[in-house]
Amino acid sequence: MHQENKVEEAFKEKRMECQNGSAGLNGDPTMMDKRLGKATVLQKEVGLLSAICLIVGTMIGSGIFISPKGVLLNSGAVGPCLLIWTACGVLAMLGALCYTELGTMIPSSGGEHSYLMEAFGSPVAYLYSWTSVMVSKPSGMAIITLSFAEYASTPFYPECSPPVIVTKCLAAAAIVFIVTINCFSVKLANYVQNIFTAAKLFLIVVIVGAGIVFLVEGKTENLSNAFDGKSISVGGIGLAFYSGLWAYDGWNQVNFITEELKNPFRNMPLAILTGIPFVTLCYVMVNLAYFTVMTTNELLMSPAVALTFGDRVLYPMSWIVPLFVVFSTFGAANGTCFTSGRLAYVCGREGHMVEILSFISLKRLTPSPALMFNGFLAILYIIPADINTLINYFSFAQWLFNGLTILSLIVMRFTRKELKRPVKVPIIIAVLMVLISCFLVLAPIIDNPAIEFLYCAIFILSGLLLYYPFVHLKVEWACRLMRPITTYLQLLMEVVPPEKCE
Image 1 (cartoon, rainbow, N blue to C red):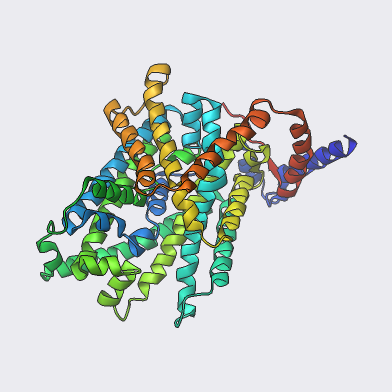
Image 2: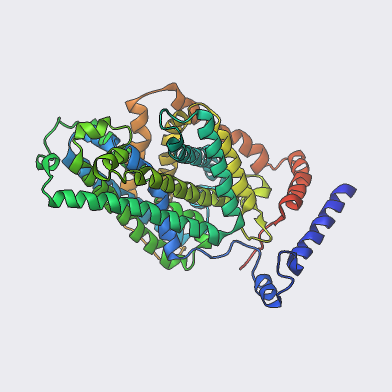
């Protein structure tokens, strides 16, 4: 106990040092007054442009450039393929509108966790946080950085594929760099996101511009009989929609940062109404451009569609395609890190994760423990030989929780009528999205039944084994164990619990 008191006193001294100027403010009284005027909470530093870039930059990763084949493979022809890409954008828009109502009704960060907590209570919210914080979010970031590393290292190995150890080390270095940026400054993380979103949009403009030129020149052979092809089954259409909707994953990113969004009741709807239709337009136009120079068979056979397009259209400048794919994946990884850290932060604040994750940097006002924890898990997920298998089998869980979240909107229409709803969507949209979510949960299981889906379900439900003793009962021995660890980590990282602001 005496040792613990000494640590707490040392921490108080360090906090006073920071507040009195050791963070670089001691020579500037004006800056000191400005800094001390801020509450020790996450600041509202994300404007409308940054929110749009977060949506666009996270949704557009490497998939549209490398392997946009799932929709075409299951739709069978160019015409149905383009229609399904458009329809998937509309469905993503409808889902995002449901999330907009939830986000403006419950203006708390953490996305699905906050809404599930309000509608269904702590156990369901905990299962979501257990699955997302421990598996879905960090493994997703690991996949993106591995793609970044592969394309960044390929020019140095022209005769062969980059060694696996090189790719994984570069991916780990990228994670450390991205986490450092996000821990250092929210504004810096936003600048990085905006810049790399602009870079990926430059590549899209180049591809779409080249496609328009070819269309004007009359190269429409692959579009002249757009609906001729193999007959389409109902199952094929369903799988095409399944592939397309996964390409639109990320439409709920703004809901994870609601508390940091400037004027969220205005900027959240505007960001969604701007970002998602723009991504839809990009996806449709990029696919249209591909079809101006490649047949359906060539597109399906290409290992990297945008690279094939670049070799045929942009040579000798085709090197810009892999370069900007690297930029695109880096930006998507940064956006994923930004929002994943906020989810872990909120889960720690609600008692669903260890308390240290809810602390923020005293100097930087960033959720650095949560960001570091997410980055640490992402590095661990880089180590296995085949992380893609893990992602594929856990994919149904994401739409399970998306469906439950939209169902919470319907439930709270009857159980929480007193809540103000600045944005209110027709309930039929919510019902439609719940049904689509059910399909997306069942589609991969029905299409390819595997015991691994059962293992994933067991893992999700196993969270209850931790929830009951450590969250519900809050067993005393665990609290005693974590108290000194939390205090030492506070000293090490110079972090504090966020202040409660009315």
